[in-house]
Structure formats: structure tokens, C-alpha cells
Image 1 (cartoon, one colour):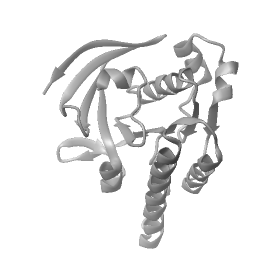
Image 2: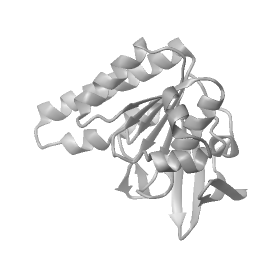
Image 3: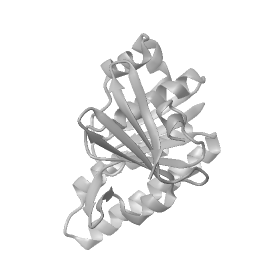
Image 4: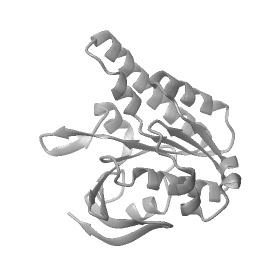
Length: 216
């Protein structure tokens, strides 16, 4: 399953969540998944909440002219959590969408959290609505959903942000960690693959190199 992820294969009609600290390679996996969907003749919706998407990196990973690739990519760069909701609403009007990516699904959500209970309740409702729309549009268009997530501290180390809502609706959850130049993926949740599977890889200029796989 993890090899499929690094090759850009995202399961359709469900949410695949990758979480980890900044700089571990989440956006690289998003770009490779995007290129795979385009290779299969589909359009990709890419919602970039953190400014992580780089045209130069797309060029390196694809080895192709970006101008042609960009014809198949619909990019949204929301500056607020409300704009993120609006972007998701627009997907219903698009055609031939094979993959929906939200790189940093709770980044804007966390920026707007405050001490006011009413405001936070509103944000939580918006997050729930976004997840509902994601699943609805993916089933309607037979598309995959890939989201990246930040981390928060817990008694067991780190865990994904976003609470129980994202954990419940994400049918695949993958943790990504980094030690020097080596990245490690761990499959924490899946409907049919063996949980606890590990895979180590390196990020190269033109792609990802798998090093080994093991089980906890």
C-alpha cells in the first residue's frame, strides 16, 4: 500500500490523510499523486493553504514542460478558512476531476482558532461541512482525496491535528517522519492493508527512492 502511495496511487471515493511536521515530504507526495492523475487523463484540484506548491518542483518531478501540465491543474490558494470552504464548493462545477488535494487542511483553521467558544464552534461546523463536501464530490466524480495535516503534541509523542473528525473520516492515515535525509512512512489506519507497515525513502531531485519496508 505504501509503495502505491509513493507511486501516486490514491484510493478513490475515500480520504487518504498524510500527517507529519514541516519539511518531511508531504508536498512531494502530493505533487507525485497529482502527476499520476494527469498521466491517467484526469484533472486535479490542488488547494494549497500554505504556499507549498512549487512550479519548479513540478517541473523536476515530471521532467516535462509545466505549461502543458498546468492545463490539467486547478489551483486554489485560499487565505482564510472561509475561502477554503468556497473553493470546495466550486469543485462540484468542474469536469473530469480525478484527484482532489488539500495541502494543509487545518492550517487556516488553526490560524483562526481563538478563545471564543462560539467562533470555534463555527469553525468546527465549517470543517465538518468541508469533509462532507469532499466525500460527496469524490463519490459523484469517482475521484480520490489526498489531504496533508500538521501535528500536535500528545502523551504518545505526536498525532495529527484536526481532532476526531478527520481521524474518523480518513480511511487511510499515514504518518511521515524524518531522520536526516531518510523519511519514514508508517501506515496507522487502513480498511484492508496491514496496519503498522513501515517504509523508508529518500527524496531525490527527480523523484522518490524507496529504501526498505518492514513491520512494527
